[in-house]
Amino acid sequence: MDYYPSHFDYIIIGAGAAGLMLAHAMTNDDYFSEASILILDKDQKKTNDRTWCFWEKGSGQFDEIVHKSWNHIYFEGKELAKRYDITPYSYKMIRGLDFYEKRFEKLKNKKNVTIKFEKVLHFSESDIQVSLKTTSNTYTATTVFNSIFSYEAANSQSTYPVIQQHFVGWKIETDRPVFNADTVTYMDFSVPQKGNTRFMYVLPQSKNEALVEYTLFSKDLLDREEYEEALHTYITTKLNCPNYIIADREQGSIPMTCYNFAQHNTKRILNIGTAGGWAKPSTGYTFMSTAKKIPVLIDHLKAGKPLTSLTFKNRFWYYDLLLLDVLSQNNEMGHQVFESLFKKKTPQSILKFLDEESSVLEELSVIWGCPKWLFLRALINRLS
Image (cartoon, rainbow, N blue to C red; front, side, top):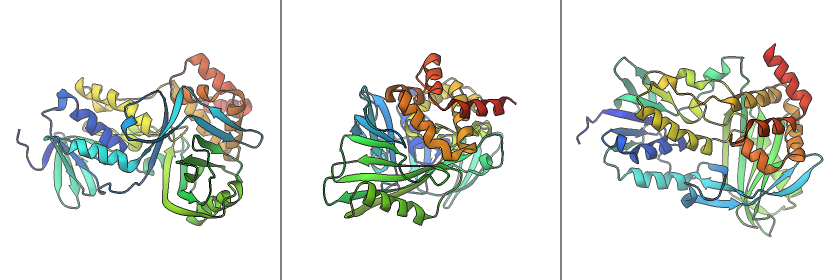
């Protein structure tokens, strides 16, 4: 089948997790076998620019590119320090570069897929199509999936708090065994909170290698030096490892908000991934949250339903909203919320709840494990 060189049935802006998952799903469904698909990204994805983690029971669809998995997690608060077996769950890590290479390898063999590495400058919609201008070309499409995220819309309103999960991570190599290779440090709140929710997150690759991230749930970013000073202090004092080398670095910011990004979807433009509000608002976990939404989107497209009618809002959205209200109003007390949960609930019940696979009774039990007065006050404020 011949395609016009500048017009496509579908254009996917962004070759990140959402864009490549969507392209992969479309090219593996006969419904889209005759559809022309263009994937646009400003970057050729040749570096390991990020790390994605998630938990699941048993084997999963991404196992061939899982770089490392763990069966235990460690949590430390002010009064609790405990290692947990999370069976039947495993905590899994995927390197961005491995994901990109595997998806591009398969997509490049699809005759109806075109991949271009060009920066999208702007796009506009008419009754019949969407026009896109890049640094090199102009394209048109019947439908566009956009994964370019901007805080602008969310920050322009005050109904829903906007918190950032921001971090700087170092992949370090040590001169002696330091890490338990089978245990992820999920949250270590022993670091100074300084009026925020701050913790260390450690993904050990071996006894001598780990990705150590200094992570905050707060409204404002820090100066780069403050992240790095905290990392160095933690490694040298808490890990008691003055001799280490930094093999790699990463930095990121993920929005944590219940703002309805879907309201910006139009007849021909659908926002996906973080740009569509697909990150789990209360945790910032995006990878598996996106993977679960892709099949729903595919079915929606095949049914010919309007893009504007696609929604993922459910009862968990309200739970997330209450937590974000608490973190917004009492950011310095975040460690108490999470410590209270781990004191009173099993990690399996927490992970099931965060996966949005729990029953209403299980959900109420988890919520009851949180500091009650904080959440009751947040609920009253929402209802008033």
